[in-house]
Length: 74
Image 1: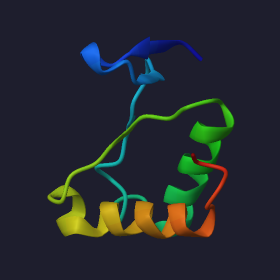
Image 2 (image 1 turned 180 degrees about the vertical axis):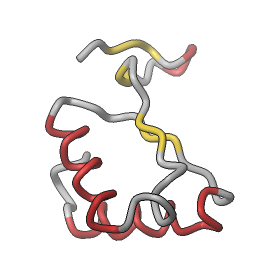
Image 3 (image 1 turned 90 degrees about the vertical axis):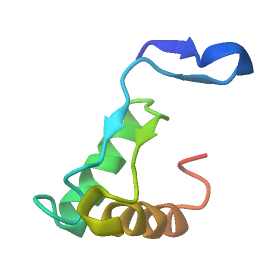
């Protein structure tokens, strides 16, 4: 996985961001967890989400995923 600095902040993120627009709509919670698990297993650390994605369900799913994995995704 390639990493890049995010602007002048010095934060290092993966070159590929995981878009989560379909979480809670086309991708149910189990499928969303699988995508997140696989993305982080490959070294990903950059997630795109917004409160308008599936009327906020995307962010809720990501929050539950993070809560269930307190150390893996940090």
